[in-house]
Figure 1 (tube, rainbow, N blue to C red):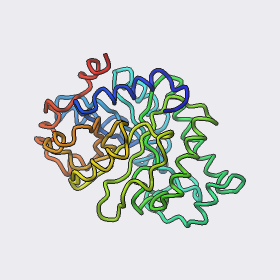
Figure 2: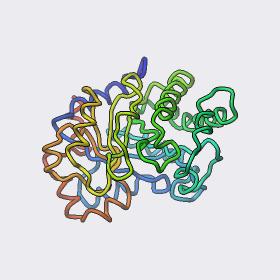
Figure 3: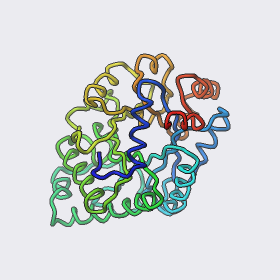
Figure 4: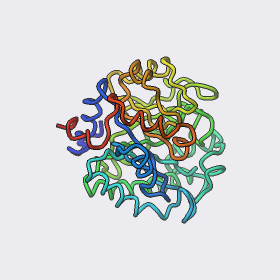
Length: 309
């Protein structure tokens, strides 16, 4: 874990260990422009408040879905949800260091990045390394505001790295070095102690390859998660992540189709899930969403105090 992690961050990691194997925390992502609208929509559908509130650092033009102008209001939103007792998780769709924010998702986040350019990002003294540092510093400003409010964060950078779609993907040795470089800059340069580091590959189907080559090491990962769409809850994904974790908590970092209760029974160590906006309602009926949120296997926001005690 982060050296000298804050008591709140340690308590959050302890919560994940407590629920592991016993229950799964419900969670909902909210894109920057929406503030908490998707959490509120799921609450309206289910009459249950999700336990995990998700947000993104943002990367796109002001006023758009992932607009960079929403960072400050969403920090306030995150602080408010933390004070209500929710678990806060932030995703980082990092802008390619060769580009300047704001960017479009296609072409700015989903793009190719040549190995030589990637190597330059990892080499102090290069222009691309300096540009990367400046971009990390922007994210660090968001995370510091949360730290100043004593909000611990499930921090999920460079997700789905075992797939070829994001600029940081499909280059395992470089990804490992990039992850460790990010850990060093946020923890040692910026002194952030409120982060619970979540490493979140995609389930290994279609173009996504096995997890292990991308794992950056136990010293820089607190919890392991899996992103999955299309209902891919095959046992082998769970078992491979469980073996890699060696006792660290597991989560479903980003999902479209909600997990069947049979899968949760057979894969009991999923400590939380976070559903993606639009996809949750496109791929799951209101009845199915409601049924999962009411299932005894799932814990929602009002249930958290008992697990924290």
